[in-house]
Amino acid sequence: MSGVTSGMADDSDAASRIPPRDRETGLVNVVIDTPRGSANKYKYDEALRTFRISRLLPAGMHFPFDFGSVPGTCAEDGDPLDVLVLLDAPSFPGCLVTVRLIGGIRAKQREGGRMIRNDRLIGVPETPVNPARIRAIRSLPESQLREIEHFFFAYNHAQGRELKITSQFGASTALKLLADAIRSHDRHQTR
Image (cartoon, rainbow, N blue to C red; front, top):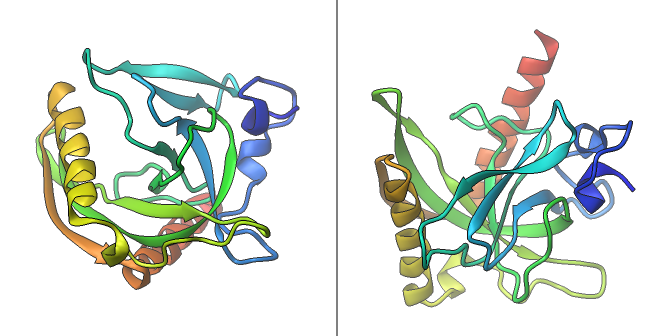
C-alpha cells in the first residue's frame, strides 16, 4: 500500500505522482489529510512519507468536513491548494477523493507580518457511480456556508493567526485558481 492510500510509509512516494486532475474524468484529485470530525489537524510529511499530527484543535472544535489538498499545485501561500470536501461520512488521512469543484471562500491570512491570500476551495465527491449532487456553491444553504466560514475563522484564531474572509466564489473561479496553481507548481518544478 502506498502512503497516500493507507497513510503508511513505503519506498515509493506515490503522493508526488498523483496528478491534480483525474486523467479520465477531468475531476480534481484531492488527498485528504484531515477527516471530518477530527480534532487533530494532520499533514503529509514528504521527508518521512507519512501523515503526522500538525496541530491539536481546542476542546470542542473539529473539522466540519474532510479537508485536504490538490497534489501538483502551488497556491499563493506556497502550499498545495486547500479543499474542503463535502462528504457525509469521514474518510481517512491519505484517501484520494475525486471531486467536482463548486466554489470556495476567498481569504487572507496574516503570515510573518503580512497578509497573504489563502483561499479554501469547496468540492463535492464524484465517482463513476456517484454523480455530484451539488453543482454550485449557491446550492448550499447559506447557514452551512456561514458555519464553514466560522470554522476557518475560529480555527485560525485559536492558532493565533489572523484570517479575513473577503468573499465567496463559484466553480469557474475555483477552476481558474486550480489552473493557476498547477502552472505555479510546474514553474517551481522546472527551477
